[in-house]
Image (cartoon, rainbow, N blue to C red; front, top):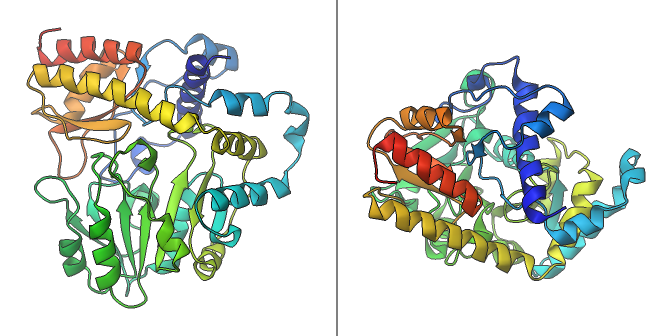
Length: 386
């Protein structure tokens, strides 16, 4: 299986599987108020129909990796079907040891999860409350902080991003001087912008006693300027750092992530449960970490696609935020959902506006062929030259 085909299958199957499972509920029941999006067409409900429909549109709506799992991961997974009925308990510990060794940490600093969403939510539950809220700037990836009917699970204090859509850590602290948890997605989703390490260190030094920083580094591999905070974990700082294998490693459909922190902080998260990671995901993740060429190659691939799309949009007067990730926000000058819906009629599926950004929309960067289809559809919808 080629990288392109693996990516197509992984992304389409994930999208369709999620939609199929959610078909009985309105979309707004699954998303925070800031992220509710128009529903997409329901997929075929049989495997053969799903496979036949893999090329029925361009799906650049969910920040999925267009390449899917790397060749090293695919080779590691080959022939493991007979282990599908086994839990593979020891493998997570082995992966934690490998990741720790590669990043100057101890294995006790790492907890492996089926994706990074669970530790994100568990951190909110463990370290924020009515008296000590969670604090973050909007828009960001805040889905994990909402429950049924889009209601916050715990008390939250939010501020808008600054005028340049950057995170103002001083304004955040001023708005929430009693916060128990400060959340920073770096680079930020949906803006793709980086919060400088100096700003994170300032917040860490000036936060209230006993509070923590939750730093989500889902997209950090794509960035040229973002500095990881994993070294702060090694220093015993009041931080939790999230990583995922869904993005640059292309394992979104396999579900694997981790949280790095002091052992006492990880023990607090255990109060809210840690499920067994899927064994194929752990095997694929280990192979990916052991492939030294994977991240640089995919970073360069994404940057080339991103730069091409940015240049095309600039020539047509469309403003973009200077994202350093696999997605970007585009200023469309009218409600983002209108443009999103119009593109969907052209079979190009994107993501819409966000809180405080009503006339923007987000696109993910797919393959060059997918972005060519996006350009054609976007030019038609926006009345631009092709």
